[in-house]
Image (cartoon, rainbow, N blue to C red; front, side, top):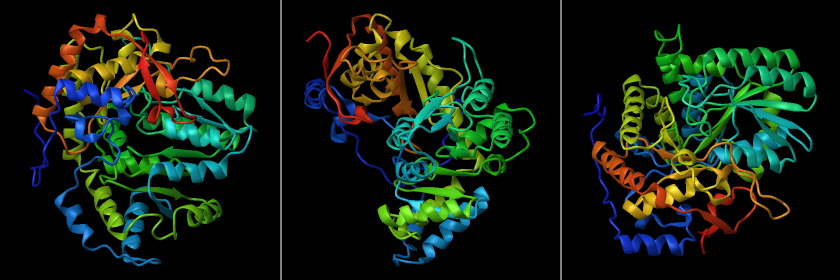
Length: 456
C-alpha cells in the first residue's frame, strides 16, 4: 500500500466510460491514430494533461457565487490581483484566459526576428510563441547521464548559458526558467540555480522570466530536496523564487487549481503597459482578460489552496508511488519523479522502433488500445523537427510518454488500473510497431496530425 492518503474527501462524482476493445480501436482509427483527436467519451482513465483538468474544492465552487461580472473594475479582479501580488510580489497583474495567451503576448513584445530566447526547456506552446515572433528558442537543460538521479534535473545549464551570453548577449532578449521543467521530465529547478541564472542575467543586462505554471509543486520539491530550505513553507520558497525574476507568466489551469485562466505578472510598468494594450486587443478589458468574474474568484481561492503543505506532500508522494509501481511493472521510469506527472522512456522500452516512427506514440496508442488509458507523447511527434526536404524528422532529445496526474481527480484504484494496463503493454512491447505522419499542420502539429501504422 502507498505511504499516503488523499488529504480530501470526494463530494461529487461523474461516471467513467468503459468502451470495449473494438470501440477503442474504432475510435483510434477514426482519430487518425492520434490520441488528441479521440473523444473523451471513449477514454477510461485520462492522463493526457493536468491543464484545466483539476477537481475544484468546495471553497472554489462556493467562490463562484461571488463572481462579479462587471465588464470593468470588477471586485473579483481586485481579489485575484491581491492574491497574486501577495504571492509573487509583482505589482503589475494581468489576467488572461490561459497560459498560451500570456506567453504569446509577453514573448511577442520581448522578441523580434533574429532574437534569442533561452530556457531550461521551452515547452511546445512556448517554443511556438518564440518562433511566431521570428526568434530562436534555445534549450540549455542541465545534462543528466542515463541512470543518474539528479534531484534538480530541471535546472538550466549555467556553464552553457554563460557561454551563450558571452557570445550572443546582444541577441538574447530573455532567459526563461520553466518551473517545474515539464518537457524535461517534470523535474524541479533549485533556488541555487535560479540565483546563479539571475546573476548571469544581471551581468549581461538580460531579463529573467518564469514560466510559473507549476510554481507550487516546484517550491515543494525544493523544500524536500535542497539543503537549507527544509524549514521553509512552499509558499515562502515560491515567493523567494518569484523575487529573483523580473516577472512571470502562468497557465493557472495547472497550479491555479481551476479549469481555465492564466496571468502575466511583472515589475516593469512600461512593459506591463504594452502588454495591457495587447491584452485589450486580443483578450478583453484588463480587469477580466478573457475570464468571467467567477473564474477569477475560483483562481484566487485555488492559488491559496495550492501551496498547502499537506496537499503538496500528497501530490509528490502519489507521483513517487505511481512511478515505483510502473517501474515494478517493467517500465523505464524517469527518476526521481516530480509531482504533476510520471515519465516513461519509450525509446528505451521500444528500441526496435526508430525515432522517425514515433516510439512514444506507439507506446501511448498501445496503452489506449489495451485499457482505454490516454497519456501524452513527448517524443518526436511533439519535439521533433520536420525535414524541409521531406526526409525523416530530426528526432526529439528523448522519446518520453507522460502519465499526467490531474489534481484531485483520480484515486489509488484508478492508478492501480493504469499500472495493470501498462504491465500488459510491457509484456508485448517487442510486438509493437511504429507510426508515420501522413498529415500535419505547422506549429503544435501533435494536436491535429493524422498518423498511420508505419507498415501500412
